[in-house]
Image 1 (tube, rainbow, N blue to C red):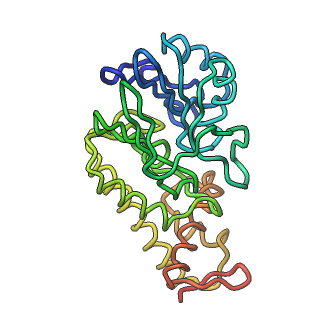
Image 2: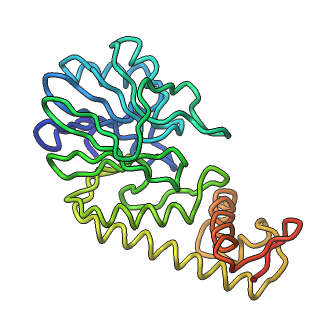
Length: 271
């Protein structure tokens, strides 16, 4: 994956140097405009990445946006705003671990809220699920949706309660599908040219996993999440069980909300 790319006139991408098992090739930072620049998801606070963003922008940075406040997406906003004087837009960090409380937006992005400039319009689409404050940004001219971690290229994301919510996540995916976008520009990986197929794959994968959770509950009642993981995630490396347990809990909480599971003193069973 190229670290610098012009995706179409007025839209560029820089990949932050934070590749890992969780971030893939790194966090995608997007630049909009040519004369005045908006930066989406400045990534972690890495000096070399910040300098690359400023250099690649080659014009005044007027706005900084974040899809959500996880540590690989928003911490770079604060220093970039100090240096450039840019206005920061987004949603503050919710309470909890793994949140960037340095992200302090000047403008709160409501669902449907817009950043309108002479060169482009970005429209916020609230997509809770991966994070309660997650927003995607619709670039109206191209009909591309910039999805942060709501949809990423070639993989699925961890849904980590209590801020992550599986029921909301699937509902948000269905909402995004109804937008009929021409492409999805994810927070990690390459541009997705067939949005409907990508979203359908994620929804089907999640519902297949949910069916495995329900079957495991029926066959093994009154187990904790830790005890249930081997029954549900037989297809993954045991080294990933801790992460899998978080997604398992998200599935269980969805089943509970749907009236299909009951928990008593940490032990789960089918309703």
